[in-house]
Length: 92
Ligand SMILES: [Zn+2]
Image 1 (tube, rainbow, N blue to C red):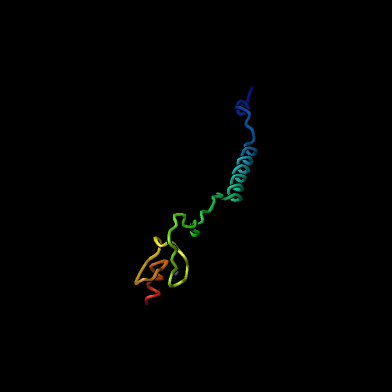
Image 2: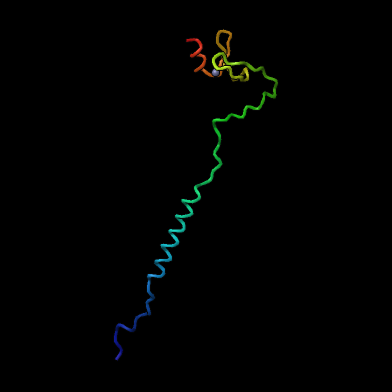
């Protein structure tokens, strides 16, 4: 007389694997949060203005006085400007 209920495969308590899974997911999240993608932040604002090696003439912005290569400057009425904004500011 074998009871039908005992014939099945011995089921292991699923709780253990469940905890392991949760722990694993937690660990993954932990590492994801701890180490954000450490990308080398490109300093876009800083322009590497290597001194004009081509011997280019340096000019000075009439508005702010910054020095910049002539090719990068804006010339207007015999004066140089570092940007359109400063040109407008100065001539206003
Ligand atoms: Zn300027």
